[in-house]
Amino acid sequence: MLKPLLLNSKKNKLKFAVTVTLKKDVLDPQGKVVQQTLRNMGMITLKNLRQGKYFEVDVNEDNEETAKNKVDEMCKKLLVNLIIEDFTISKL
Amino acid sequence: MLKPLLLNSKKNKLKFAVTVTLKKDVLDPQGKVVQQTLRNMGMITLKNLRQGKYFEVDVNEDNEETAKNKVDEMCKKLLVNLIIEDFTISKL
Image (tube, rainbow over all chains, first blue to last red; front, top):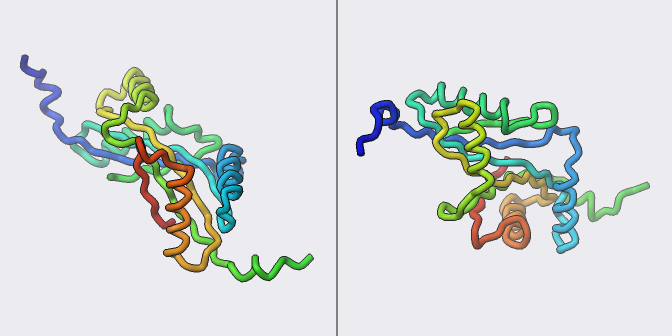
């Protein structure tokens, strides 16, 4: 079966990495638990640990700028809670 | 109160970012749900999305190589399930 022409017209798959971190002043109880566990395991030089989220996103766009804007929109609409989290997008 | 000398001798705080991703052939149902949700929200150019974990680790070591080895040890002992996950460590 032939694929529709619309799908074939966009062949470029751009890959982005999205890193979501809690803002500096937001408590991170989950990270603290991991940190304490590691210290209890003998890692006494561990000073601090904070946990975040990570996404790898493939977008079917020809233009890198458009693709990055799409990913930015995804972050703002669903992936990131902008009240308590920051995010960075980088091209892979 | 004076801090113990031992703590003062290590002033260098090195920061590392740890990214944990599922191996290529491991299914990622959570990522698939996020992907489907984004597509339902109208992001039709989204091709694929995979979710991972992210840690920011501060280590009290003077030597970067030693610090990185410490973080590597943390990953292998607790943070990463090496059977199904890969990880990368980068200096921040």
